[in-house]
Image 1 (cartoon, rainbow, N blue to C red):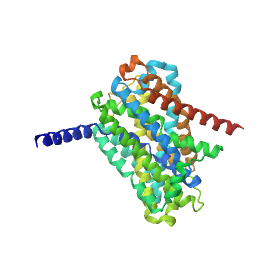
Image 2: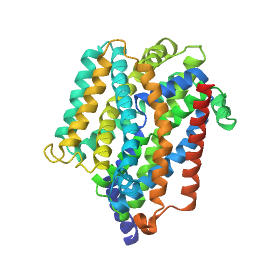
Image 3: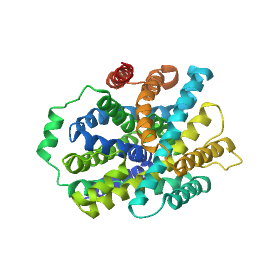
Amino acid sequence: MAVLKFRKRKFWAQLAVFAAVIGPGIITGSVDNDAGGITTYSVAGALYGYNLIWTLIPSFLVLIIIQEMNARMGIVTGKGLADLIRENAGVKVTFFIFIGLLIADIGNTTTEFAGVAGSMEVFGISKYIAVPTVAFAIWILVVKGTYRSAEKIFLIFSVCLLTYIVSALMGKPHWAEIGQSIVHPKLDMNSQSIALVIGLVGTTIAPWMQFYMQSAVIEKGLKMKNYKYVLVDIIIGCIATVVVAFFIIVACASTLHENGIIINEAKDAAMALKPLAGALSGYVFAFGLFIASVFSATILPLATAFYVCEAFGFEAGIDKKWKEAPEFYVLYTGIIAVSALIILVPNAPLIAISLWSQVLNGMLLPVVLICMILLVNDKRIMGKHVNRPVNNIIGWTAVVVLVALSLVLILMSIF
């Protein structure tokens, strides 16, 4: 009886520790399914049916390995990835890497506000009301809030993304065909399909995620004694990412692809689902798009401001006051303002911005991964916590595959 009571106390104690640690992994994974990601998954499902679902399996494995490396580096060093890159690669190299990332992230944030506009149009609300309202609300959340309060809201957003499961099931998917596409993967060798695969990987494993994950671990003050709980947090977050992506592809493949409907953005998918899978399915899809867009429109500029300021030695962090980190808050405000204004410009090329920002993510990812893998294998930085061989094999394989796909896409575009 005494042993049983001890085990119960131990279980509740461990659960309490996990509850305190949980957050960075789940939030980073969930926010990855942003408006750009939902658009990419929707277009993949509509164009190729279930054929590209197999890409989620290698993406899932690589995502876990990369996020684990990220978290371990943040815990051991107490420094963000941008800070470590600047210290070890120099200011010039850092400058060019981060200019590319900043451009990509402004495109990504613009995509998030496009998601806000598109999802609210499904409910009959004008973008000229929705976009400024959401932009102001998320600005207040970060500028006036704390990391702890913001994290609770982010976790609620993460749960809301599971609505895509409902939308997919309403489309009555063909599970045998889905299984076949996973067991016997296919890839058409043309520029459109390769660009889409790079986009799928680039949106599932986005470059900015690596910086946010590491900064979140540092802001939360996690240590190596918390490592096993952090790992569980990461695995749950990665599973949530891939599950949501899977059901978005399934929702569009089982309805839009089967009826030969071509879409350009996630809003088109929500509108097209209404007559095919019922009005509720379309509204559920649009609601998921809205939640994902607001979620990512908050996190993306936050992560960008954090890693840019960190890279160039400025103070950064949501728990700091404006006067303590003016560069951080000015950059955060600027990214939100520019991205929201682009959406309000009539006839802005939002579809091109959305899809190519994901492709740019996929092209920039190898650069970030190379920096990460070199840093996490440096004993001067990591001590005994350097990578194991399996981490390096998966990490370097991901780099080689992404570089090869990017080169193929460039050569196909030229010739």
